[in-house]
Amino acid sequence: MALYINTNIWSLNAQRALATSQADLTRALERLSTSLRINRASDDPAGHAVVERYTSQINGVDQSKRNVSHGTVFAQHAESNLESIKNLLSSTDPANLGIRELIVKANVSTISVQARQILQDEIVMKMNEVERIAQTTEFDGRKILNNSTTNTIFQVGPNAADTVSVATNDFRVNRFGVNRLLGNGTGTNSGGVRGAGGESIIIDGYVGQEKVSIPAAGTGGASAKEIAKAVNAAQAGTGVSALARTDLEIVGWAKGSYVLQLDSANAGTPFTFAVLDGILPGTVDLSGMVTAYNASSTRVTTGIEMSLNADGQGVILTSAAGDNITVTLPAGANPAGLPNTLILKPTNFTGATTGAGVDGFRVQTLANTLTSGSRAFTGQVVFDSERPFTIISEPVPLPTAAPFYPDAGLVLKEPTVKTLPRATESSTPISLSTIDVTTGPTSIRDAFAIVDGALASVATQRAALGSTQNRFNSIIDNLSNDFVNLTTARGYIQDADIALESSIQTRASIQNQVNIAILGQANALQQAVLALLR
Image (tube, rainbow, N blue to C red; front, side, top):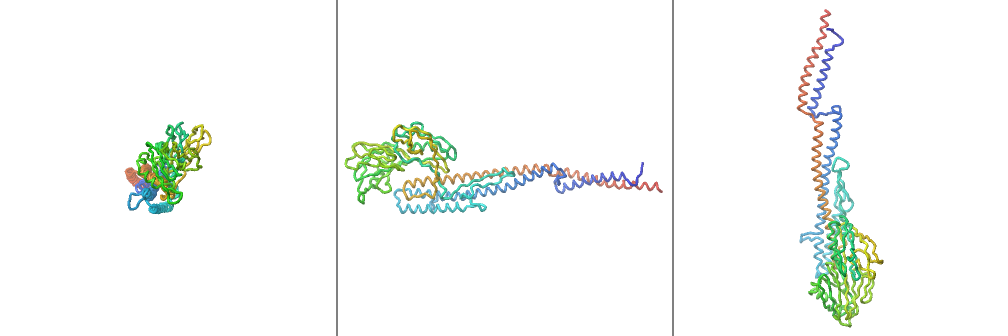
């Protein structure tokens, strides 16, 4: 056996084995102390890269959970303020009525002008509070109900595309109410063809677009009531509702006794109208006539209400349901000597009075003679929605002879040609600030529509916020699952197996001690050279 002094091969081999066992022992001790299999990139380069990606995803998920909680508080805060607005618009508290209940309270014919003004003042006060809430409601320093912030975005996941947008509408009084499109006012239906030729309209609302066929009619054209019914039947698909009303003003009265027959949804009934002289010269007193009519069986039979017009020198016949109203002079029922004309003025009158018994634009005159005369009038349809909409009128053939009234109660304009072209009309916002219960039945009817539109807008927004809260709760559950799954996946790669590392540590520790002993013996072998040199 060769003996070397300069190179101790046995010692070098023992040192190499000792270094290996020491490295194993050091690695095992490090993993046991940190509980991590990967403590640096060199431990597992590919595994380290995967762990880093998982870690960024886990951190993003964790922060997203806090963002979602923030978004939930945002939705709750906006919804609670909208609840306050809703309570101002409508309340069941008898000690603190909402705007709608005040409108109901004002809609009594026996209420005084002063009392109605007091109710209007209270309505204005509540409008001011609605305005204050809309203008001051904020979240994180951002106004959220006055159109300053229309869209709030929340990051609800670890990636760029993981966002949820929460939209809030404008609830300021001057922008908050109902979107409305007025059909043509009450008009004569003589010569009208509405419904006879399959006439239809297309309603393009915020929910969707639907074609509505106007009900076919016989001689008088479909009533506004029938049109409104057809529109409301499609409301679920369009978001647009309709109201119908027929208002017909009759002026030109003189002192005396008139007999008119009124026809509406029910059988017509003749009624004697006793007209008295007014207090001022040249005026008449119609109040007794109105009171007598509204207390009569004729009102019940026809469903037509009567009220005084603005100057008290005329009466307004109203079918609140939107039925057609027909006024007839029974043959021989009216004595001679009275003024020869009663002027029937439909709603939205813009034309000039024409001669007796002649149709003109939207004015109808009836000769008050011993001969009979009859004119029928269709009502007005009012289209409402909580959001903007349009109505498209389909082309319709017109009669060959004037007058042309296929549009009475619809949205089409007065025709000037034989075939009416396709026309589109857009709704107009009507704000809560326009509510005024002091000016009579028409304004109160409008007030109901406006406040109901406002309530619908609040309900829709609250529903959206409620759905958003539920969505955020679902997102939280999903993020919690993602957090667990991503953390588990990272743990499989990064975490140390303590049982395995303990066995490795024990083995490496024993091996290290053995290697140290062997190294000592290997170093002692060199001393054998001294025996040869003695």
